[in-house]
Image 1 (cartoon, rainbow, N blue to C red):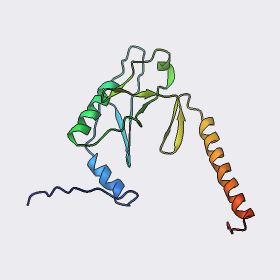
Image 2: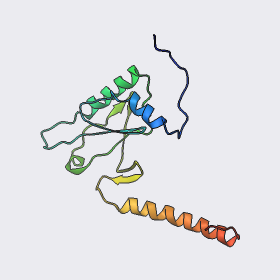
Image 3: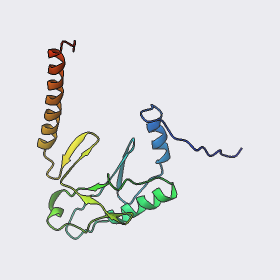
Image 4: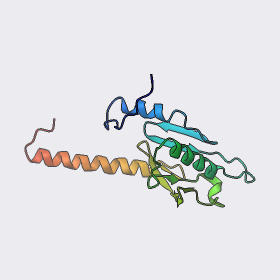
Length: 150
């Protein structure tokens, strides 16, 4: 029996969606560490000494080749690069994905956690406290309006 090609998609927020996606990207590999979680893929590379050179551009090219072959788009607007440690003093050239330079950032949110290049928790804690205070203010407004918030 031949495979049947379906022209459809998976409903967002379905329970089966993450498993289908992980099955589809199961063969995604690169020359660096690849971390996959639901619809996020993160590449990481450890450079031990100053004489080591980064292979992240090669890894990005591998991912782009895989995505082209598997008809999966890489969202270049959400693709970020963050350098940690002493490599920031003499940074490698910017990585390009699909002829666009990847934005090099000092902090970004990964799986709900705000990571910073100095590996400090202060920005994440500030963001969580800000969000919590907004929700508390909203609940206070509801209570003053006579709506049961309990």
